Image (tube, rainbow, N blue to C red; front, side):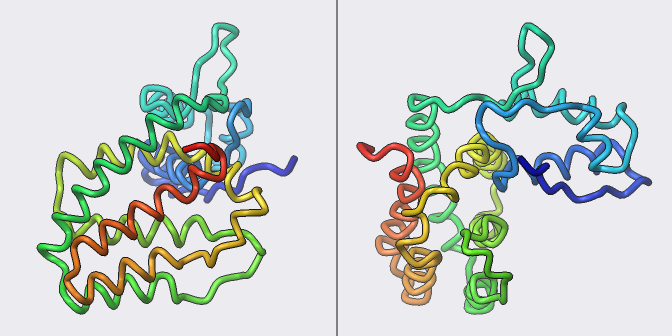
Amino acid sequence: MSAPKIARIDQSKLRESAYDALREAFTRGAFAPGETVSLRTLADQLGTSMTPVREAVRRLVAEGALVDTPSRTLEVPPFDPERMRELKSARLALEALLLEEAMDHLDADGIDTLEAIISAPRTDSGMPDLKQNYDFHFTLYGYARSRVILPLVEALWLQYGAFLNLVVQERAANEIPEHIHHEEIIAALRQSDRKGAQGALALDIERSFKLLLPES
C-alpha cells in the first residue's frame, strides 16, 4: 500500500506545522480505518524530527483521530458502524446550525466563491476530490462566524476522515455527480431558500454515510 500523501512542513514553526499537516491529512481521508501509524514514517514524510510529530500525534489521539493501543502502537480507529451513526447525527445537527448562521452573512460574492471552488480545474483521477469537498464546506461554514460550533464540526470531520478513505473506494461514490448537492446548496443560497439549502446539505452529508451504512 502506498504511503499517505502528507505535505512537508515549514521548519520555522515545527509544532503547529506538524499538527496542521497531519490534521489535514486525516481530515481528507489519507488514512484508512484500522491502519497502523509509525512516528518515524510520519516524521520522514513531513521532513522533520520525531519531537514535533510526537506532540502532534498526542493531540490527534486526544481528538479521536488516532488510538494509542495498549501495545503502544498508534492506530486509526477501526470501522465501527455505531460510531459512524453517531458521527452522522452530530454532523447533520451541527452543520445545519452553521449553514443557518452562514446564510445571515453570505452575499453574492461569497456565493460566487463557493461556486468557484467546485468549478476549479482538477486532476481527474476518477476519484472524488476530498480537498475540494472540504474547501467548499468550510468556506461556507466560515461565514457563520462561529467560535463554538465550527471547532466542533472540524473535530467531527477529523474523526470521519478515515471513513472517507473507504467511501472514495466504493464504486457507487462515482454514480452520482460529485457536486450535485453542492450545486443545489448554491442554487438555494442564491434564492435565499433556507429550507432548500438545508435539504441539500442533509442529502450531501447522508450520501457518504449511505455508501458504508446502506440501511441509514
